[in-house]
Length: 132
Image 1 (cartoon, rainbow, N blue to C red):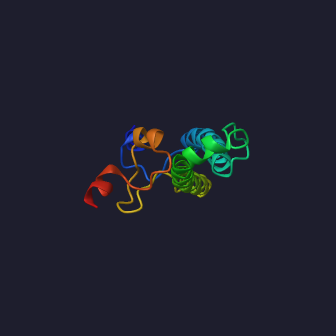
Image 2 (image 1 turned 135 degrees about the horizontal axis):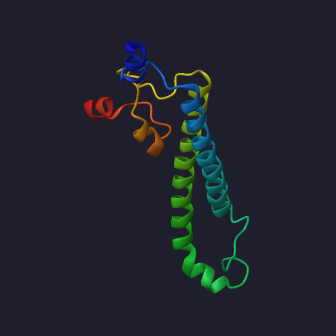
Image 3 (image 1 turned 45 degrees about the horizontal axis):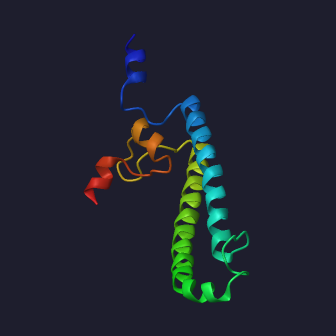
């Protein structure tokens, strides 16, 4: 009986294989969406799928040039953030394969499941994050 109590105690060393599979499915969905968003941002920057006035009105284009370059700059920043997010999700998948997923890299304790459902690429518990 005491073995069952210990198994459900909060001091577990890692998430179960079933829980890791749950996280993997969540991350794969987020990764697919993140890659789609990244491609959209990239195409916005290069105008590869543009529907703006690029080829219709030279006068209008001159007036909009400032806004367009700002938009490209913002798209570039968003694309860079999105790329980093993709890398973080891919790193989380590797931690799942290594069975080290969900373990705080500073405290060594399990990051609460609720936090990982919201931020699946988290490597710090709230406790460790607040100490920074």
